[in-house]
Image (cartoon, rainbow, N blue to C red; front, side, top):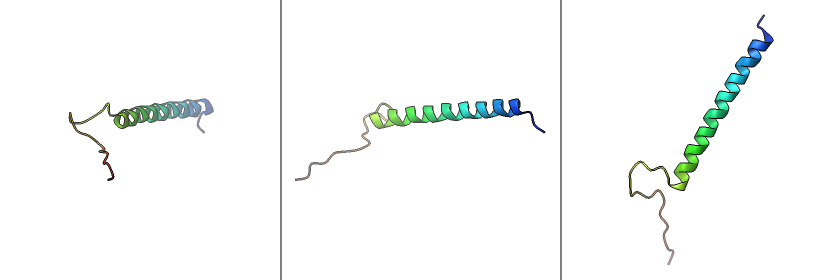
Length: 52
């Protein structure tokens, strides 16, 4: 039978790793949406058009 404290430590490590990856993903997505991260300089992701 597995040791309860060892399983708890493994669960804590997996939880911390998951939280870290989710936070880094949120930072990258937020930077992309704000326009700080672009693959090419001078390109626009979205254009606004005037409806006339």
